[in-house]
Image (cartoon, rainbow over all chains, first blue to last red; front, side):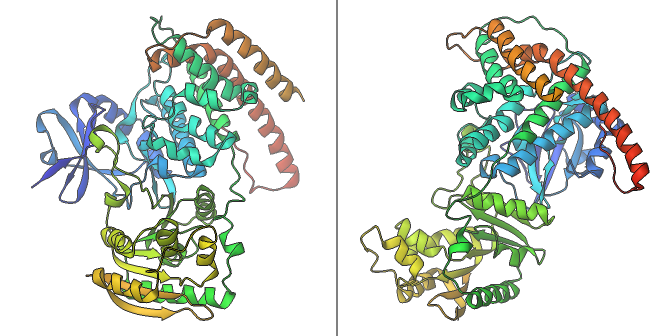
Length: 456
Length: 82
């Protein structure tokens, strides 16, 4: 029976996560016994789980422990469909994750506990909403103690949200570089001077950054703060976070369907073919690449198929997420992924956070109106594109758009046409080396063709 | 509005207080915990007081909105209390 400890699970001595025969288990160590028992006996666990704020778990027998000598219990949390990371989330996903963390901290304080960390990596999206996954993040609250996770919360949530709100939505991608959140001095320098007049930003960003710098090499005298004071800080963080906004308008991709030259009939027909391809494959998990606002992803997700709907445009992903939230959709997960540079494995020994490509295999990959961007905008030969699709999934729905299509012509307006091999015959020839073509359907009133393929 | 006035006063007092407490220091080895710890001690009083006022204000408001609800006979709307 092979057990493998997760490479991201090493910082907290309270326990760790390991995999055993496809099951994800968490060992609770003896040192965490009191806090774990308090989490359960205080009623906090039940309140969090019944409100879908914390992932539920079942307790298993001790003989499953990874390291029996230090083990108190082994728990099995509900398994997630897909793991995503903060640098792949849009503004509202990160904001919702931050608000969830604060809501949990408020409830924890009510039950006499507190969050001992506030990492954005403690949150995952499950059934369309953020959920806290680190069951061992709670500890007994001792009257007078400040919030130990305050710094981490500001760095992981508030700082990137402020940068998006006041500067640019692409800042969230930088969380890939700053694995422990944005340094506050970095953010304080970047955001406009008028933020000094906002009480929340003044305290939690500007003065926080100065305080960190000033006390960096000084001994401090520890003083107590009242519980009301602590609740005041959490409440102010919450109102500051709630006040941050970003309007996802005006980008080329978020407005794509308003400007595309598709006629209504072709659009409907394309949806129908994609639907029939999905029916043929009957996938459990789908990856929609270049999904834009998720119009085609929803053909799968509306049939209760878990669909990871990725795009590189933060505005398109934001719209996609807001729509899924508005309609309470449970099976679609919009993420910001740059296909030309997908999330690599990062962290300690480059093993803490797994790469997007290797996170899990997909039953079906959809590549609609995408190939010309990869081949022409990014100079990728068909062989390389086919290699990529083969690596991430088993079945492939792919749309070929010929050179004379106005969308392809637009890509060629400012550059020399060096793409002699970009033809439907060569596309079929190259892809047939990697895939078996199952179906081929022409979209009426266009030169576009849809294929259903299976990896050889 | 008194609420806006309150905010402006807070926004004015706090920076003066803090600039006095934390003079700009040279770049140093970073110990992120200490600065965050001290900051919380300093802001807890102010934010705690503001939180208490907010709680009472909500209670007063809910008292009035309950009365209004009774008048309007609209039992479906619930006021948010913390």
